[in-house]
Length: 267
Length: 158
Ligand code: FES
Ligand code: FES
Image (cartoon, rainbow over all chains, first blue to last red; front, side, top):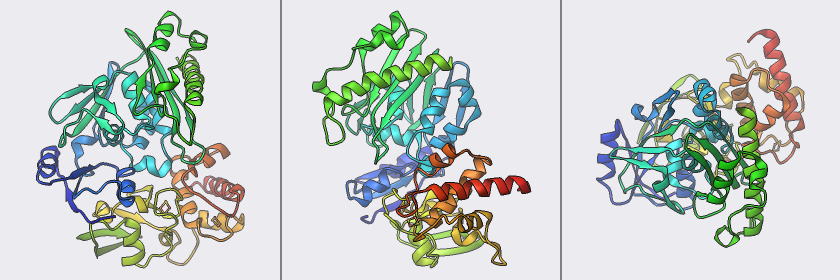
């Protein structure tokens, strides 16, 4: 890992100010991706602004209309929160399946979204549940937030403060993990909202995306059989040593049906 | 940079580079070499320690991030009189190690699991060990050791 300056932010304003005083800084959230990329020299920031002690980024608010989770809340806190389990079990279930136990203790919701890894789990939940990403300067709808592989709508020093997940009628996430890396080869988040159905897919494209054909079919009838034979076109899907585009298309259909089944059974 | 850190109940004061990992601080500054560096890429879990009460991979945390924290390593589990922690005892009795390289991480993960799941079933134990790799044992006796330890601790009400 190359040398860098280390700054410990005391509050949000301080974090942004520090960030703006360097040429190529990065915010350090849980570090479970960033530190690994720095070791491999895929990232070479001249400074890390550590968000670990910014208390305002760790707040959680659960009420019947929705859940607001601070950017620095860890996957493990979300997985273990009784309030989240009661109100939106689809979020705690997703959190439970990220990485491994030690990674979940450090890794954060905000870090995952800001990174927009093509195989990350949280982007699927954010897109399907129509979450709002609250930053230090504005609110960004999840639909506008994910823009490509490792690309988001965030401006350079913009800091995610919290994420608001509106309440869904029912929802669930199902993924197929790479047997070695345990990343999602394909992950599908299905959500029945007050005003429609959303199907968001991760792992299969440059970043998370929706499958409108499936959504329309599920509005008619929220049953696994409704989407039989429907899948996105192969041409747009990732094709790599882990899985061909055709295989991913097949997995999307299988895991969408599994997600629908578990959403129905839980409700 | 200066890092003030409590390790195994002792307050320490170390000088590290900002890029030093917590595993570097433990092994190189403090010579606590029971925390193993297996992969240095967050895959193997041999470097697992408890940071402020929860298990983390110490190769995936900067030493400076742990400033002001409380760390427990494998060296801190046994009692002052050398009495093994029940998890260490169970690993020994169940033959849950062969070369022993993964063992410090396995034991630290096992103890962390019982913190949240005092009576875990086999599936839960295996899931909790997802981030710990062992190249020798085939895991069966490791899982057994954690189960035995859980039973004993529950029986004693600790
Ligand atoms: S050395 Fe840290 S996970 Fe392998
Ligand atoms: S005992 Fe050798 S790696 Fe686990």
